[in-house]
Length: 469
Image (cartoon, rainbow, N blue to C red; front, top):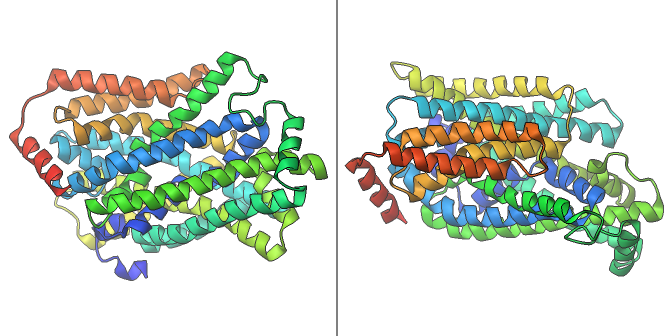
């Protein structure tokens, strides 16, 4: 259906700016919550306890603020500013960058971090097949990648968004059903909580319960909350804002999206905690914490229902993979190829190149995923930090500050990205997103103030975008 509705390049990359609010909300949520929601987050809770739930608190706050502060303004401004259909093109048009440097740098950052991000999804797919069927990691990874590629190549942005809706509903259903049934099988909420507390004194404490030093607990809490900052710069999420039918639909989308996310995160945290009690009582503890949801569902549920829960894991992986492949394709075709190709290629050529871009990025990410050397959560955390630091400050300032300049944005993106890599190398225990975001914000403001020149055209655009709200 999406293939038949994709008539030109804008349709393939942005669905013709015609997404209903509830589709945009569920699509953004499913694209955001990849395999780490059903594998990575429950695994972290299972291994460390409730202190890891600060990640969920940070994400919930960040998601709400993203819908509140960014969604309506970005939908309005991206249309007013020469009908920008990608984040790099929006930056270039908004800041009137005639050098093409800003657009190119933004596109390269997208390709670098998304290749790592996509690779994490493929790793999750391989681990899923290995754990569930006792199958081969590589075969599982290739199957998940091939199926996702199939519908993304043909359906484009609209195909990815519509499948995201179904996948998002499957995910939230599984994350509500599994913990409820697990608690009943253990003997009720009271007994579950008692066992969890007995296994580890700090398991039910948001602050580590004495199992950690004050400094270590503070670092975990601050780092968890810092995840929320990443939302402002995630291209595969905020591009959904640009695809809304109107800026006014952001309000209803916010309510749907925040509710979906609250239920999903609560289910993931609950399942991780309940897994501690379940495996302590009945035995058969998992050696890989990130497979706790898979094992509980296979043991507890009727095979058919367990199959639906396992499908939710695939849904989480595939919904994010498809969205990220589309953004990478747009970076290659819309922001690099189309920017340098003269004369402009035809719409048909652009759609074909868009599909080729999806294929190329998938192959590179697949090669990286053949021999994974990190956990799913760690891979996602690094890519999340990269986008949050590189793009987050620029997105916010471009929507709310008229004095942002192209050179300020370029300096901010480069310093934000570099700080993520440098901070990660030193391994201080503090999530690299927080210092990198702060550095990028300060550098962007300072360089913008030093290079600012009033442009009446930009001022008029700013007013026109506000008028649309």
